[in-house]
Amino acid sequence: MTPFAFARAADTADAVRRGRVPGAKYLGGGTNLVDLMRVAVEHPAMLVDVTGLPDTIEERPDGSLLIGAAATNTAVAGHRAVRTRLPVLARAIAAGASAQIRNMATVGGNILQRTRCAYFYDHEGARCNKRTPGQGCDAIDGFNRMHAILGASAHCVATHPSDMCVALAALDAVVHLQDTGGSRTVPLADFHLLPEDHPERETVLRPGELITAVEIPALPFAMRSDYRKVRDRASYAFALVSVAAALDVQDGIVRDVRLALGGVAHKPWRAFTAERLLKGRPASEVLFTAAAAAELADARPLRDNAFKAELARRAIVAVLGSLAGKRS
Amino acid sequence: MPATITVNGTAAPLPDDPRVSLLDLLREHLHLSGTKKGCDQGACGACTVLVDGDRRILSCLALAVQYAGRAVTTVEGLAADGALHPLQQAFIDHDGFQCGYCTPGQLCSALGMAAELRRGVPSYVTEDLAAGQVAASHDEVRERMSGNLCRCGAYNGIVDAITEHQAREAV
Image 1 (cartoon, rainbow over the protein chains, first blue to last red):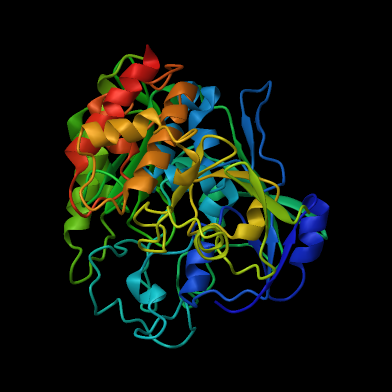
Image 2: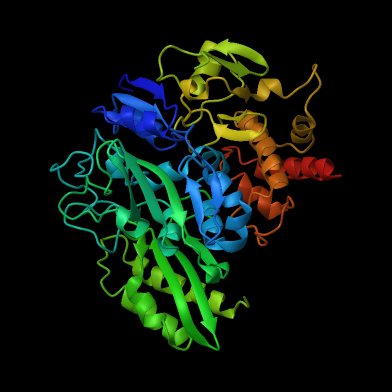
């Protein structure tokens, strides 16, 4: 590991002041960053520990939640308001990693975790445009069973590994950001970027900018929501495909719906196409199948992952069908 | 920042080099070799320790300096006055190991799991998310312990030991 300086941020102002220094990185639970430093993919000159910053989960009068970025994954999944009002978020977090990692990992760090593409990790043996811009991509013609089928480019086919972010994308979550110049908010669905010509650019974060909180607007029908993760073993594995959904069916008609996919793209994939098709129509397996097909119409499978499109379609239909059958 | 960390009730100095992981601090600096280094990349759970009483974490992915002023419990801190912790005895009673390398991590992890169950932290297989407490069913234990690998495959004994210990705790 390359030597680095370490500082513990006293508060948010202190953090963003330290974060301006070139080569500085914010450190949350370390479950991804420390690992990447050990394999020489990341080599920050300085780590600014932000785990002492606000980690409160605030239930606001309008029904929204404001979650401090330092809150652990476990704290969020275990919070009563999340368990009872946002089951999709509790289940998505519980589907990720292991209990030990969820105890360490923060909300901010989860959002900023990097792809688990094996070629990205292998800095001595593989080419990667994300790690070394312009180098080439060994995943495109390599073992790419885990890789993207939507929104990929000729330069990168990596996926975003987070489960939590798939639920946040479905829930219209908003990311709160701060730097020394001030603060701003960005919808989570717009926070991560598609790879295009610059896969090394993964988010809209500016240099030195810090995630301070995540806001989840009130969504009463999210009481009827779920997260389903399809993976190679029953637990502790990254998603091949995952589905986050909330469904509002009244008198047999889909009044409203939120749908997002994980494991299929460089970012948590909000399924806007399917949502448009679903709204206002009679809830049925025929409708769910058509919506799933429309969302996956642009899927571009690689050598090893053609199964993902069909898997995603079936997972969408299964989750929506299950939610439609539940009484709220 | 306090320059010490408390390990099994005893204050210990933190390393000057921030690259030292909590795992290496325990094993190489403090010579507490009960905590094991399996994969050193957060995949196997052999390095699991407890922080602030009952929060299980992976010491291999933790930088020691980040835990300044905190209290860490390792497997060496489980037995009191030479008497095995009831969970340790349950592992023996149920053959919850073969080579024993993963056992310190399994023990600390299971104690952390017990606390999470008491607090109502849900798992991916928890059916009733609204429940304030979650029962330690076979499926819950298997899911919640999935971060601890056992290459000998002693999983049946491990799950039995943890389930029996949980049942006694719940009385």
